Image (cartoon, rainbow, N blue to C red; front, side):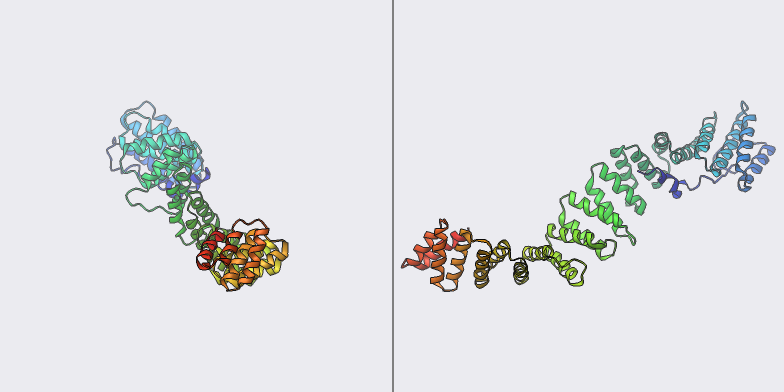
Length: 416
């Protein structure tokens, strides 16, 4: 977590410079007219451009009132508040926090003033990097329960996250998001980080999903959401997230495109992977290579688009002239009843690097399906010589007077 978050969270520090010193709505000791005038003069100097001098003068005025009566203590507290605001103008939140601590520690100060200064001190200490103390004080203020705002709950969650107290931080995120409250983008990022570190990954992904609905989402956020979906064993969701990021232009380049293709392959949408591949190969975004063509063939095969898959594997096989590519084409053609293609591919696999017993068996079945009993017998004989156990059953079935029943049984054995 970045400690600078506190410095940039201006919304969380709103009101720190506001002063309503004299006309308070809460009960307070009456002040002498000369004391009121002195306080008003100092208050008016906040915009005069010399906060250091004002802070010194306010401190000195507070010191002179030490040991006085209730009205003097109240005036002293107000001088300390002026000094705190002057220090804040000097961008010294720690000095301001110390002054407010002194103010709320005076005897006889009304509870509402103490609460106000407690909240401000907590925020200032967080801003100054005193995270543990700031969290402690903010927790005290929140426990008192009166008019606690959502921003205070988010600030509490942020502070606890900086202390790596993830479970407690997540509970404060729950409170901040409770009762239908809508978080802004900054808070959604914070919620996702805290939930994830607390092991509540489903809620982390939900927070990221809400963030992805925004107008401007960084590439890192899209990647993070997709990665989290993968860790949750939701590959389809990961693919959908990456697809959305790709379409919106947040994810670009060859690496992002390849990741999109792989996610669609893993996520159960191989046809989308194949479509992206075909377009990228056609327009030159991906290199025209054997590896990419083989990936395209695998994608169409996984999508069970028979025509596209067989065409893609033929293109790969013609290019590579490798027996395994021809064999893959033959296997698919056999499985889908494309007998002529199966026979051709298996023969070319044999020519490219030797035949397996299974190749001969499949070729024999395909030939038999085409009605070529002589070619089938030759293939089954070659399969038997190669050691295929089922070959004998096929040859017997061809010689049997009840060939229809025998062939059906042997065909099932060959497929297995």
